[in-house]
Each structure stands twice: as C-alpha cells, then as structure tokens.
Image 1 (cartoon, rainbow, N blue to C red):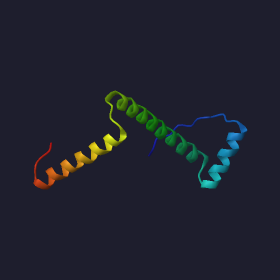
Image 2 (image 1 turned 90 degrees about the vertical axis):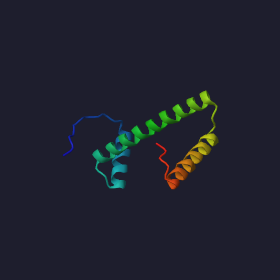
Image 3 (image 1 turned 180 degrees about the vertical axis):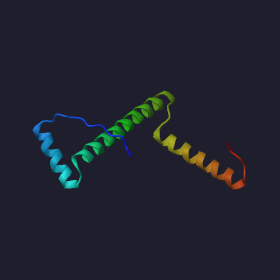
Image 4 (image 1 turned 30 degrees about the horizontal axis):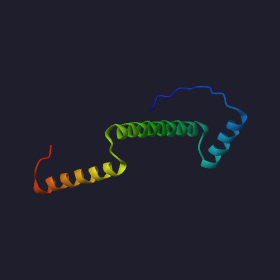
Length: 90
C-alpha cells in the first residue's frame, strides 16, 4: 500500500473553482487532479533543466542539434553493424 500524507492548502476562489470544474470534467477526485498536476509540473521542470543543460553543452562544444542527430544515427548504425557481425562493442 502506498503511504500517503494529508495536507491543507489554501487557494484563491478562482483557482479552487477551476480545479473543481476540471476535476469534474476529467472525472477525477480533487486529490487525483492535484497529484497529476504535481507530477506534470515535476516532469516539465525536469525537461526545462535538461534543455538548459543541452543548450549549455551545445554552446560549450559547438555542436548543433543537427550534429547530435547525425552522431546518434552514426552510433546506432555502428552498433547495429557490430551486432550483425557478432562483434562485442562493449
């Protein structure tokens, strides 16, 4: 069983009304709606951090997005060729 915690939050009336309407529309409990929102917020934040890291590394190395795509394809081709020939790449 999943361990849970009970909390109290304070929301402006406009946010509360919107949350209730959205939960009803999606046929979710308010608890499930809030949990879903937090998970999505965490994922969005992680993606923002990953994009910032990628932009930083791109600037530092000079690689473009097209370079990365090409390098990934080349590496996958090499791995597939090694696997096909029975060569251990690792």
